[in-house]
Length: 274
Image (cartoon, rainbow, N blue to C red):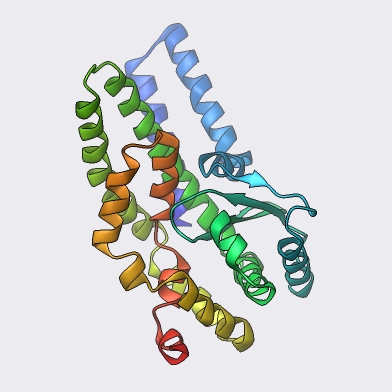
């Protein structure tokens, strides 16, 4: 609800801004852009997020375990078969996107190659459970808002920094931008979605002890949040990203958003597994 309200508020504020500051042809052009943004929000939020993550669709012959796991878990939860994607990133993450009856699962390529068949089924089950319990659409809208904000910020800064001849100065701008941007989107994510989302998901997973136990053991493989995603490690990743493309920096910013595994892999279950 908060994500939908924020979208409507953004559109209303932009519409009022255009109405006050523009007139004639410029006003019509501005309203056209605003309507395009609204259409994307309503119909193509998941498609834009796939683009921002640089996701590539997987064919059944490319990764048999992934397709079998997704199909089995979707059938178990009585859901339509999802579209399957992978992406190249820095963190071992997996995401689910939902727009109407369209469901997409996206998993980091390195994690995809490391998972066993049992772990892959547990990942697909956890992602699809968010769809079954009505969580995924809200998360998709939230990630869409922040993903668009990240892309717009990087694009604007990229245009201005391209005018500066000094490479070192451009990298300094990127570093300063990441220092401000990532904490900002992290705060916005918590305000829109909050920890309640992940607590609800954890309670839902408690009804499925086998899948939850498998995920907890997976947490030992991908690394504990307090170590792998610690502040020093995060800052080193941000510093390294300034030598990469703006697209890679956007992917990293989306990966740094709070993720359910940060909570599931740091609770009592993971301590018992250790």
